[in-house]
Image (cartoon, rainbow over all chains, first blue to last red; front, top):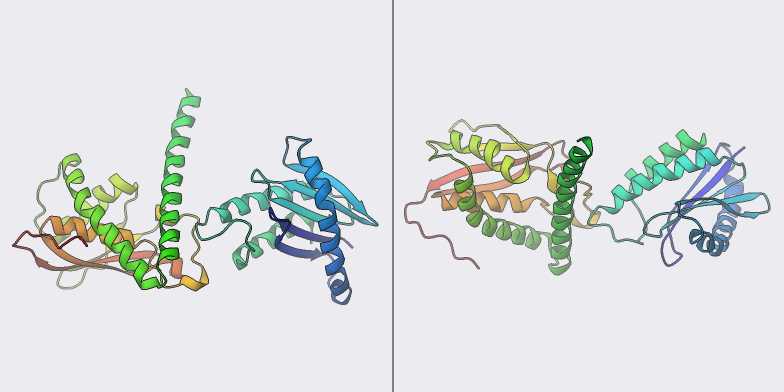
Length: 140
Length: 180
């Protein structure tokens, strides 16, 4: 019963892209409540992410925070865009390869001259790719 | 030895990416400056025209082609020599009209549009319009008046990008159109 909440955070702490994944098919009712909680947890962990990013030279920051049963893992790109993922099951390898795949797609997407950095990502192409990576790496 | 080979390969690719990014920045700025998509298209064609009239001299000096006898030869030289020299692609020449005065260049990998996705508000932009203008300008310097346009564009959902060239007439009084 693994749930994941993935968010790409811009430079002004604004969410650029959010997506939830769950291995459970019928958790819709609960999800409405969890949406606000997920945003809150992710936002709260941003300070810790900012602290950790200067201590390490790699982009993947592993697990930076824990809230009740939710772990928060982070990945910081070269342009300081933060990928945050909330999960209730430890899955370091899966999350690490998920982050790397997302990073590659994000780079290609940001090379589009019409995309303004830090603006919300609305492309359905991008969304489909993220869902494919989640299926492949996180088994959802 | 292999290190050197790697370096030169990366360099070409990086220069190509710089070119693509520069063109993308140009189009984005044009969109910001002009409100309407048709104005952007017109401006891109004008810029292409100015490039074309100057580029043709450079092309003639670097390639050893003499005069072309007819439009078919012109089309072949355009696709196999000119495009190859400047963009490193060879579009296919196809769809000749029955009167042999119109043809299409099918561009299957256009370096200008790598990574580009047209936003929804600007669906009418002919992103590669600069190519249309360049061909028009270059052929005008060679005393041929042509019309160029894009019947198909991969950024708008079609499977390939098609540039159509139509020969209008031979120019006898060699005064180029005013550059305004």
